[in-house]
Figure 1 (cartoon, rainbow, N blue to C red):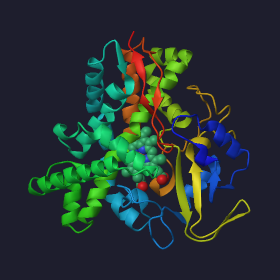
Figure 2: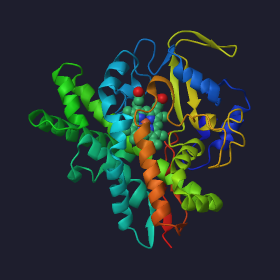
Figure 3: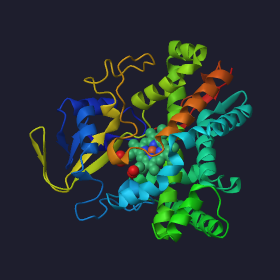
Figure 4: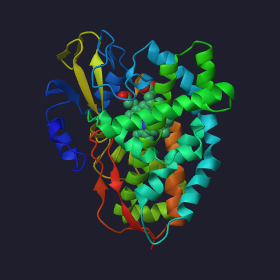
Length: 376
Ligand code: HEM
């Protein structure tokens, strides 16, 4: 069933067919869950990890397969700890004026018909994460393409173009690491260089950490912004309400993350035999956690298929996962989403869709490739 999915079609009918088979079902050689409670439990259960029990990587290597996203403790703990200070809530809130400036500068440039993805949703998170990592403007131009190519390699499609993109990102970071060694600053690259000099991580680990932060930092947020604007335009009464009360921007972000999450699924592997709901999961068995389906679990959210900014009962969705791999950039992503959606509501109140959208290929990272809109 899951192999029927592509990046274009609405996957929720397939998720509902899987839900009908029960909270934990076997499908195409792996376990699958659509249940919010069960997905949350597995993500927090230390008997599961992201590698095989012997520590080997389970898939085709990709640019972040050696990063802490794809590592179990103790390496995960050590490397995540080194990146964490840059993403704390106080530090991130200090970025708000910068993010607002970036959003405004991008909207200053749009006129008449434009592509919301190319002209706004993509460049905003790229500018933000580049600044946070200390990447000079001159190097950010090609990132949108790189990111897309690298993200496609997460689906197991590694092309020559993707490999070239990965090489260029590595070369850029190698150069920046050398520069910061000579001339340390107040950015993430400098703090990783200092940690490397204290032998807390190796140079390859610093490189994969930076690649993870770069890719995770914009490949997902672009779709939070795109999916959020689309959901609003498709629900005119809620769009009107938001324009009149833009203080609810954080609620718009949370409902978008629940209803149209940028990341649809993740996988965990059992490190030891585990019994759950009367089913026996063997060592190294994979469990696919359908985060997007868990976010529409009717046991948790009444009328889950409705995009509804006025939800009263709203336990946290799983768009940022859960447990030890809970998204390190969640505070930053929420800030960017809030600023971007509020800026659109204030500055483009007459925004409307101006043509058919196209979708990205990926089934894991869901979003639009293009979204033609008109500001009047
Ligand atoms: C709306 C935007 C975003 C979404 C939906 C999102 C989603 C996710 C998800 C689902 C995971 C966990 C995957 C798993 O459990 O296997 C994750 C991990 C991660 N995210 Fe995000 N993310 C977003 C934005 C960001 C941003 C802006 C950054 C900043 C650099 C970031 C950095 C990371 C990192 C470093 C991890 C790995 C955490 C770990 O393994 O401990 N993300 N993200």
